[in-house]
Image 1 (tube, rainbow, N blue to C red):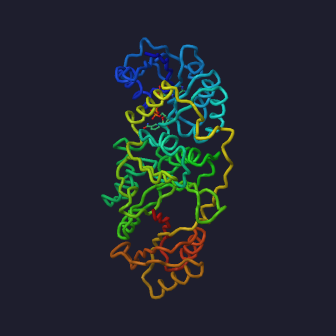
Image 2: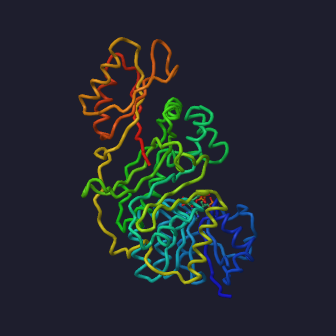
Image 3: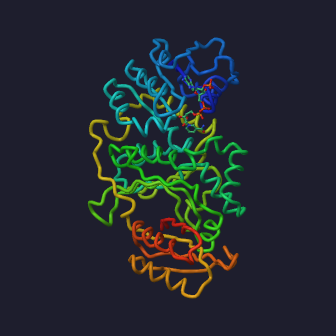
Length: 434
Ligand SMILES: NC(=O)c1ccc[n+]([C@@H]2O[C@H](COP(=O)([O-])OP(=O)(O)OC[C@H]3O[C@@H](n4cnc5c(N)ncnc54)[C@H](OP(=O)(O)O)[C@@H]3O)[C@@H](O)[C@H]2O)c1
């Protein structure tokens, strides 16, 4: 039995889950032939009950001191945040030749290349499976299963809070605000859900996946981000009418159609054909699909958050260290990560959905179609779902376009919004024909 002394900074949702695995269920870990001893812990409140006895475990007020301690072999960072104590402690641990495991997507997305170089220079591991899709082993899939392949696309649902809200809106017909309150009540959304619903959380995860998939030094700021705050019940209903589900997706894609146009890196709501696996994922789960050559399509799904699932991913990283896993932090050594061109989202070609609210007056539809044509936007379908928005002589018109650019659609819909018969700023959503 080989012993590894583990220091854990952060004893909240994930840290508490890890204590359950390492202390309460120590026998399960010992089956692997390794013993993981919790040798030190750090959190803000020393007196808070963590669900397990920690009397014999060394306490550190300062996570950096724990990270540097000679009494630990592996430092586990479960504090969170891209900077502050989490970053300082991880840097200290790597500098002091400790292996590091973290669930911190913000830290890895924003400082991953620099931390990877530090880990590689000091010949220690920096593992972060739990940072993307919680308990779903998507990092392992990219580094292992698809590790020797050419990845062309990674697409998926990377935020369970948004997926729960959008699923609820589809099932109940409820408003975004009501579905969000429901998510908070059930513990799927935090009191301040802005990182989730604003798409930042999914973008952190996408940036990490893209770095591995494309051997690229991805700056987090290069991910284009649109959240779900503006999705209305009418959009969910209209999408359903057209045979689609609205999902918040992350897409990292090498554009095969237009050579030299760069990597697409985007998080946004999209209409997904209702029979696609991504459309069918309901509730708080995550789904990730990886397209690579010669492997083909790999689909992974499961719990993207929560104490047990996320701590299981952290524990799996501890086992990888115990098994002697070494190698680059991403798929390529940090110094060899490539600079890649990122494609401008407003110039990418795709189909769009738009919902307009129009005063029911003669000539309104003709004016809409003329304006779209003026901006080179060609209509694929135009319907008026019965009763939608039909109050005060107004009615909703829902259209889909042929392939065009966001820039063209927005210039057309901005002009339409200024017409006297137009009663709201049109909602415009990308259609992702997966
Ligand atoms: N929750 C999930 O389902 C989930 C899923 C995937 C990834 N993650 C990631 O896992 C990490 C932890 O998330 P969480 O949900 O477990 O967070 P959490 O419940 O808020 O726990 C954070 C912990 O960090 C401690 N802490 C805060 N500042 C500290 C400091 N300066 N020094 C020492 N300890 C400090 C807190 O101490 P006190 O308890 O004393 O306040 C708390 O124990 C984050 O990076 C998050 O993004 C979470």
